[in-house]
Image (cartoon, rainbow, N blue to C red; front, side, top):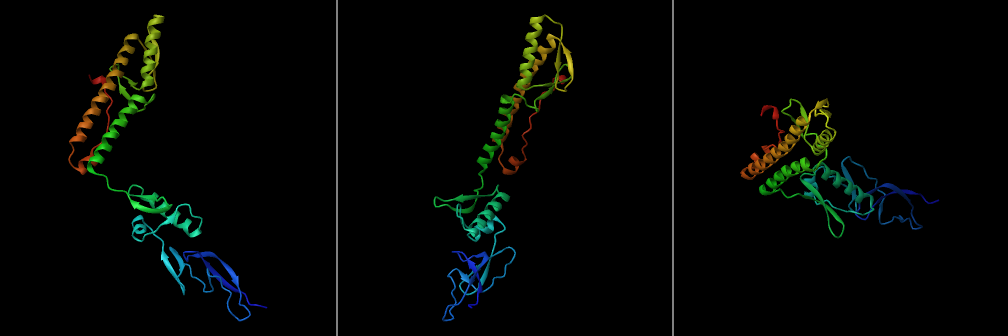
Length: 251
């Protein structure tokens, strides 16, 4: 009965499969060994791929950083089914996820995936981003129905919401008081305390909501001017975008 031997398989790139095959010798005692197998047992090492070089197993270190993957020229086929290819893809994607502010994956028209460094932004680009951050903040003041940051202290001595929802509520209360000819109306203020407010109180709050919005825009233009005037990256990084709601109790 022919003796069966264990053979260890490798893929088209000669990387070891986690698996074995059984092979035998023919009538002339020649080993019937497929071209993608060897009877030499590999020794697996943590953090390394095992690769057949034609006569022995060698070990290829798995990259542990994006810079290392780039330096060693690691790549894979983005949609390739090969197990080793899939492992390389998973490693490259994980490395990029850990350093996504500095590196990204790139896939060519031939579906070859590699890692490449994200070009460092110019000083002007960083300034434009900072200015856009200011613009986005003010857009939120304008467009968000509810904005928890837009709470200011009224000259009446309590907190008031200054967002679009509150502005609409104040308008509605003013109209209701005028129609019903009532002395007061219950109004939920910014500190979540209901208060009985007069028509004059509501009109005061309404004007303060408008003025608070205008003050926020004044801050916007000042910040943009400040950022535009900055001349160093260190100053730009240190510049904080902080909007201050108006305290009408001090006016």
